[in-house]
Each structure stands twice: as structure tokens, then as C-alpha cells.
Length: 251
Image 1 (tube, rainbow, N blue to C red):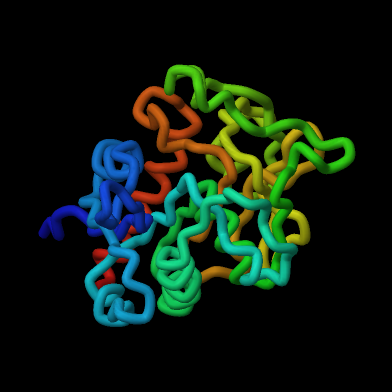
Image 2 (cartoon, one colour; image 1 turned 90 degrees about the vertical axis):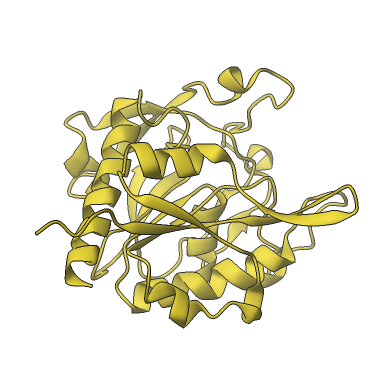
């Protein structure tokens, strides 16, 4: 008997506009979940402690922690105060950081992208570079945000997949090209995370949760962009969708 599609929570950001505030997320995340993972995406509002996360997670088969224009507030990893003008989102921090812990505790499949990837590292006690481009011997991983969106999310550099990891199991070639749209990145790796991929400058580009009871992968790049057309991105979202359907069968 068919159980139908899995339900996947998609984290949102608290975005001010015209004197109002919106819980918003790029459509590319929801489309990747719907079209490639073949699951039903449901937005998770940035309500912080007002979100009944236990009740929510009882009805979800997976959670996607998305990227964002904002950065994790450095107070969450004892980092230096951000430069003036740096965009933060306290409502998102208050929602996603504790939610990641509960998702893992409950054995719910998760995929984390860009800001979500950095959030996972912070949850595990790791730290972040606020400006990767200012670090010795590191590349500039930012994209030109004034250009067309197709140029911003175009493939930018190779990554090397670590043998024996989740990603290497999805791809026969140990080297694959990805896009690059970030200024922050992992500095000290959180304890309990396993490195899945490196950039050419040695920056950690992907991690998984060591010993996780369900799919738990995080990547620094943006596989949601044209996920249907990019073979590697397609494999990531399909693997996530398979894990969510397995959760749905058990649930």
C-alpha cells in the first residue's frame, strides 16, 4: 500500500520589508524538495521558542535547513562582533539552532545548505570564519551579487570528495564542480562532524553527522539551484528524498 509523499519542513528567514516582517525562503529550495526529492515542502516559520517544535517534528519526515542572506550571530560561537552592516536574523537563530538538535535527536533526515551548514557546525561547538576571503591562503568564495542570478549561481570551483563519505557514495568521480556564494565558512570543525569534501584552498565544503541514525548531510554550496538539471545536485536531493520516504514508512 502506498503511503504517499513525505513531508519536509523548510526553514525560513525573518525578513523586514515595507515596515512589515515576513517569514520567507527562496523558491529554489521548495522546488528542489518538490521536484527532485519528490516530497511536499512545508515552510517552518521563524518563531523561536514560540514554535512547538516537538509537535511539528511529529508530522515531518525530513527537514531542509536553507541558506540565507543573513549570517549566524557570532555570539553563538564566541566569535568577534560582526562588522557594521552585517545582516543577522535573531529570529532564525532562535528557531534553527535548537531545531537542528531536536531533528538529530529524533532521527529525522536532514539536509543543510550554506547558512544551514554553518548552523550545524555551530550547534556542534564549531566556529566560523566571518570573511573567508581575508584568511591567509584562502580563496574568495563570494559571487558577484550585482550580476544576473544565473551568473551568481554558476559553477565556480572544484571540490574533492572524501572517500567513504555520503557524497563519495553518490558520485563516481572524487572531484566535482560546485557554485560558490558565501563569505562565511567553517573555521574550527564541530566535534561529532565528519568532513565530506574540501575546496582547493582546504576550506571544508561539506560535512555529515558522525553516527547519525538517519541521513544528516550539510554542504556549503547551493545544490538547490537548478537541482533538476545538475547531476550531482540531483543525486543529493534524491538521496535526501529517499531517506524522508523511509522515515514516512516508519512513521
